[in-house]
Length: 434
Image 1 (tube, helix red, strand yellow):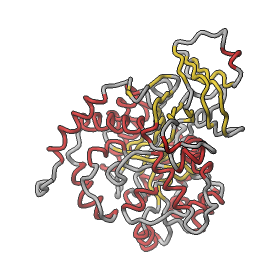
Image 2 (image 1 turned 120 degrees about the vertical axis):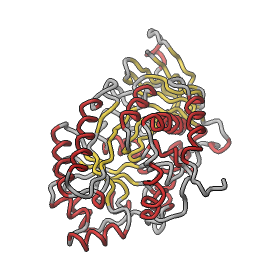
Image 3 (image 1 turned 180 degrees about the vertical axis):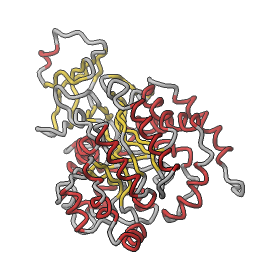
């Protein structure tokens, strides 16, 4: 499909950062031309011409860490610390999961992300074939991983690793490259040394990443020091885990010595400010991450601990939290870079995150006619500090229109919502009155 977005404003995440009155041509999944010279497009025929007047184009958001099917558990267990939330609420509920439940929940989560301008995401969960099928059908781009939980070596650990490798074999590179698969040991406190070594080997063998949680809580760090005499970061380095490219979520309680290790090993970090705050985990020192020149993306985490998948909201919060003691910390342009290009690089999707000729056409188109966009001095500031996800009008991934005029085109959103509504009774707590 060939597409022309005619006469729009654009945030390119390149140089110049902001361009006004440009047209963007798309063919064979890529941006073929960006120019303010309308004469360059006169001789070309397009399958679709979009009026870009009063619209803002930007690279789609990259959600660097989430658990997509957890939309099933949105509002299920709030206002608790991480350990209790997981052990007493979430893990027992997840025992009820089926592949079909995960499929429909994944479609609902994808619809939520599309409606807030996300085009790529990194997911870790269970029944990942169902998530991959939903991604394939929806047209989204994703890095997917089965979350291995195996505190002890043995048959259970071997089974978890086999599930991981089978998933890698089936889905890595599928859907015309839109789907990539990572190896995912859930966290240092849920996986034994043997599992970590095997995960590293799988990541290297399949030329992919490890996706994990790292030092999300102070308890996690204290327990690691007691059990191993090392922080979780120090332990993983000693095991050689970082020989494989690694994406680590949260990092709220990273010490300066940990950051030195992560910098030396080129570990990527996913900042999840809403989930960190809601679970009482703390506030990550993102300014230090940036000073260390780490690859940093932004993630929503799952809808059970956020409780939404809105990357615009997440990016705004990241920018504001960083300014607690310094209003110059994490300017709007740098926060946006983390949410787009930075996330793409962290996930090794190196062909997206920029509006440049030759790049993959993953684009979110915002309507700037709302009163909160007036008077319009700086589109970057307006986007990060004033815009709403409801302003997202059209979303294109790999040159395909997945949402147009706020209508999702690639799958039946209403059917998915209805099926997940039906599942509420299955997951309802017995003593709940709501």
